[in-house]
Image (cartoon, rainbow, N blue to C red):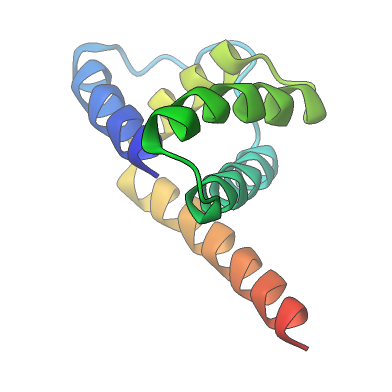
Length: 112
């Protein structure tokens, strides 16, 4: 979770300096939601492990790489898309609402 917060902060600063042109290869809203779901699940998994922080810090990039491979998306495309979409608060709110809804449904299914 700390990585996403840091990414949002960095993207916010860099987003203010960039132009409003749409980058090539921008991920769709659906693909962003899918990736964000997997990122949040991975972060939760790592936080639940009984390992030292240093170990989890090394494990996360490995698992994050697997997420991007699973979705056949280079991390640079994800980051560029995220930076672009962060410029539109309403759009990001919609993406995160969908992400949270999906995670809530998964949690309810797991509880049953």
